[in-house]
Image (cartoon, rainbow, N blue to C red; front, side):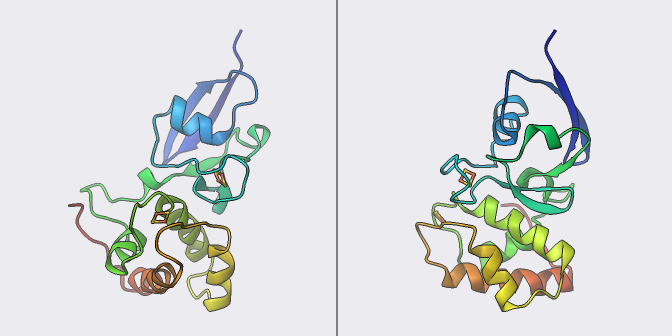
Amino acid sequence: MAETITFKVNGETKTVSLEGHEKLLEILRDKLSLTGTKCGCDDASCGACTVVVNGEAKKSCVFPQAKLAGAEVTTIEGLAGKAGELHPIQQAMIDGGAVQCGYCIPGIVMELHGLFSKNPDAGHDEITEALSRHFCRCTGYEAIMASALLAQKYLKEGKGGKKS
Ligand code: FES
Ligand code: FES
C-alpha cells in the first residue's frame, strides 16, 4: 500500500501518496500542480523553490519529507486575495521594477513573506540577509532590495493591487 502524507497547503488540507523520498518541491509541482514554486538548482543554492512552512521561509527542494506531516505550507499561489488582488509584496515587486524574467520572484516573495510575517520592522541588514539566499540572473539586486523595502511599506499600509 502506498504511503500517504497529509498537510495543509494554502489553507486546504491535502493528502498525497508518496513514491519514495519525494521532495516538497516535487510534491507541490507534480502532485498538487502548484507550479508557481520554481526549481532553479535542486540543491539548495538558488532560493527559487522557497515556500513558507509553519511561518518560516524554507527551500522546498531540500525540505525533509519527514517534517511535512501536519505542516502548514504557503506557496505563491496562496498569497493573492480571493478577488485576485495581488498581495502587497507581489505588488511591490512590480512597482519596484524587480521583475524581468520573473523566475526568481516567487521564491523572493515567499522569503519576504516569511520575514515580514515574523518581523514587520526587519531592517536593511535582515532583509539583505534574507535576500542573500536568492539568485537573480536578470535584475541585479538593487531593484529587488528597493522592492523589498517598498513591500514593507505596502504591508504596513495594507496596499495590494489588482491582478492584470
Ligand atoms: S531549487 Fe531549491 S534552492 Fe534552488
Ligand atoms: S527576474 Fe529573472 S532571474 Fe530574477
